[in-house]
Image (cartoon, rainbow, N blue to C red; front, side, top):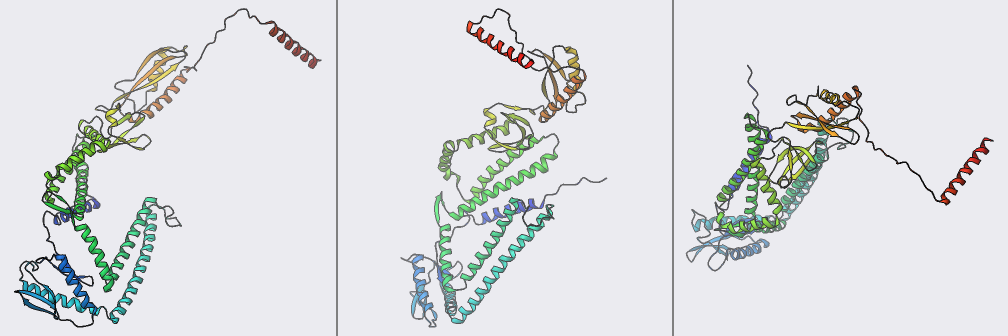
Amino acid sequence: MMKPHSPRFPLFLYLRIITVVILLLLGFWVSPGIAQNGTKYPVVVDGYQIFQVSESGQFTAQERAKLINFQLREVVKSDKDIQVKIEERNQSPTILLGDRYLLTVTEKDALPGSTTNEQASLWAKQIQEALAQSQSERSFQYLRNTSILTASILVGAFAISWLLGLFRKRISRIVQIKLNDAHAQILNADLPKGLALLFDFMLLFARAGIWAGTLIYITNLFPYTRQWSYQISYVLTSSFTSKFITLGNNSYSLINLLILVILLFALIIFAGTITNILRSRVLQQIAGINRGAQEAIAILTKYSLIVVGSIVLLQIWGLDLSSVTILASAFGIGIGFGFQDIAKNFGSGLILVLERPIQVSDFIEVGNLYGTVERISARSTEIRTLDHISIIVPNSRFLETEVINWSHRNPISRLHLPVGVSYDTEPDLVKEALLDATKDQLSVLDTPPPQVLFKGFGDSALNFELLVWTAEPHKQFLIKSNLYFAIYESLRKRNIEIPFPQHDLHLRSGNLKLSPQVEKALLRLSEESTNGYNEQGG
């Protein structure tokens, strides 16, 4: 006996889960609540950062670094071979450029686990190497070789950009063949606009990445352009990493907040992925749970994961939730006044999920809309009409107006079909014809049986109404159409007339008195018409 095929997760689902987990781990790793760096300032030679110094005495780290950088720039501009030395001054190692003072290494400058002398020796060696490299990069031979390399890199970048364009066209042709468009002679002629836009965006992104990497690499080849590149990157980095907001005991920079936003976004994706797995792999396998109950459980699970996960994420991030109470209160007031419609629709969505007056797959009628509920989200509900058009309806509308749910609890519904026949017809014959029309109609239930009601006497017809039951209310318009076809055929076989609307006009007899002038005019017209007739006859 063969075992049933077990469903496997698609590859994109694995990739999605792995990506979210990596984002969460990276976010926790760079969390400001885990580590805080001290205040230091870099020492730079021609755009290369050598080391960082701390504050010392009355000088801040930035002031010390500026003095050191100024002296290093002066040495680099000269052609002299400068030796970096270390001397002991005031019981502290001091680094000299020849005979000129450069800096004194303090306890704050030393890395953990090393002494000031060891730190001074390391810095002296790094300064010597940086000065030698900077002077060699200003030689004519280095500038000539670097210029040739730059030209080669630019040619290579142009070639790669051109090849990417050819690759994009090749991919477009393959996609056209996959879409059964092998006879197309013009590329992208029948390619869907969305897919063509995606290919163009990917091509633009790849070319932009290539040229950005090329320009960054070229600017780092020359000492002067490397200095400008370093200054620009340092300003941007400082802008993103400088602390500008304090919540509780922690200060946060723009990059910290961006990482927090990315983590929250990853949490939302993770909750959606888990919810989809729960809906498609677990709830569908449990017997007795309809689609509406599955959607309700999935939605509650998703929002529970988002709320609980957000609280845990903020706590791990190092953000004390008690410190944002005032901010949350202000945000709540803003929602109450500025986003009252969104809040109202969100609250209505929760009521729809909990009370379940409408569920996914229900056939409903809202105003002039007839359709099947496809999705109930936090703010709106998607309805698929009989014309297969998706209409997004705000959730609050389902609680503020009357909603006809043809599928609520019991999908069996009764349909009314009014019929009018001539006064000369026997009512029992009409009843027989209408009941006979319901036979062979697969969508009409035999239990409860169809009924015929004699509604009354109309102006020009005897009014009857055929009542039938169906378990497919979403097909009611098609069912009515088929029944009317069958009714017409059944009435025609029995010679039962379907009358037109009629109105009887009764004129009461009496003497009509005319004025003398009107009588003379009528006599004159009569004589003229008689004479004309005699002349034609003669």
